[in-house]
Length: 341
Image (cartoon, rainbow, N blue to C red; front, side, top):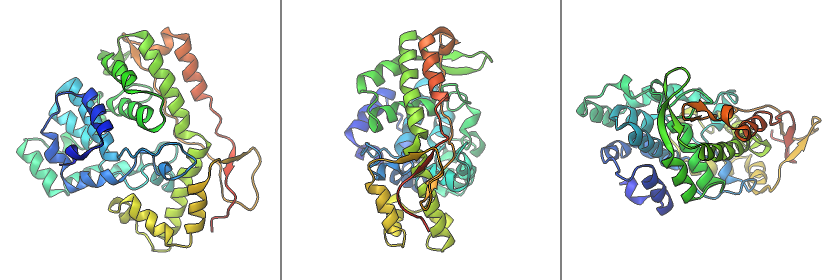
């Protein structure tokens, strides 16, 4: 089973999220539609470039399992937990870079529309749901469960998970002890709209969490990230226009297989310039005769509850972290020295 083969560090992290692992997840995880997510990195393809320091492969499936564990930990509700497990089942290779391909770099939600159809068309998943007496519409949209997902800047299981795992595994902003202390301080609270939400018991820990997530938020949309995601999107676009890759391949192939296709194409040279690059180039003026990127990206930020009040309202420092994050400038031109044609 997949859960038995995972990296020891990931297993340790999963155990923090839920020490009493819900075994019912395994039958669902072992379906082809979910297992294919093990070959997709949560980094949206940036892990493959030396522009980024992380070499740790944390998959879309790992993220989905962790979201499910968080939901189970706080709700012990099977339907909500499965909705969390399925929420990224429609994720293509290079993850949100394909949203850039679809022109959806500001919301990064364009691929979610396939979630319901993928579940519905899976004989194995539908058989398991029938056995558990669960309807498709109870698990194909995690947005209906506020603990699983909610609107920015609220804290949900999804937002909490990628903050903890990215801080721990990708960008070295958290260690295991810090993850544990943050997680153990979280409880279910009622927000200003009288809707349940994940919140913190302790001001100091909430402030620490906001500091880390504000740093991560900038990483998610800084120059090297925006450039890399749009660059990957544009290469995929050219390969699809040339019928070398079909759109459906993005949902069936492994990232390693797509990289092999790129390396066997005429875009191999520019792709490997990007892979080996150590630093992105930035200019306030439009660069000439090079491929460049000049647009923003989705702004992710979290202003969690702390004893039913937004931390920004009771901590000046947390408010400053959030403000600095939101004011991050995305107006520059970003490029490397090559032409993509």
